[in-house]
Amino acid sequence: MAIVTLEDMKSHLGIVDDADDDLITAKIDAAQAWLEAQLGYELDETAPADLVEAVRQQCAHLFENREATVVGLSITETPAAVADTIRNHRRYWGYPDGSE
Image (cartoon, rainbow, N blue to C red; front, side, top):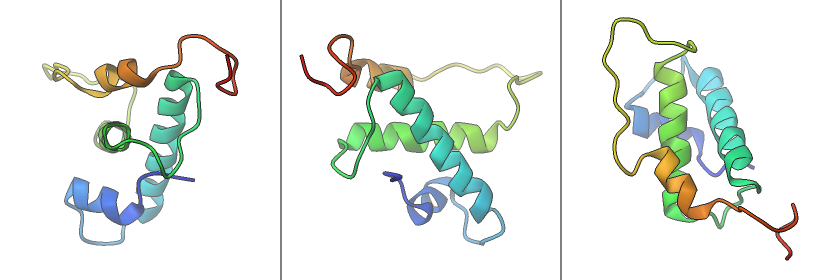
């Protein structure tokens, strides 16, 4: 279950029409799957606000940068971005189900 809705993501991106709904939905799913792989566990509707925002940021990145590389631009990751947020919630040890 996606923790970011299509409507929420469209608002985040500033998109008002429905032309890219399928693409945005796919990017939401991909962003959440990537985040879950980095965290080591699945997210649900009780996910903390900073992880919801991390999914939004990752989704926006995937939507705006649809290729694996960016040419001709200077890009810098902002402090407290997705990687920093994940670091605060990552499961570094224990069993896959979260038990110790």
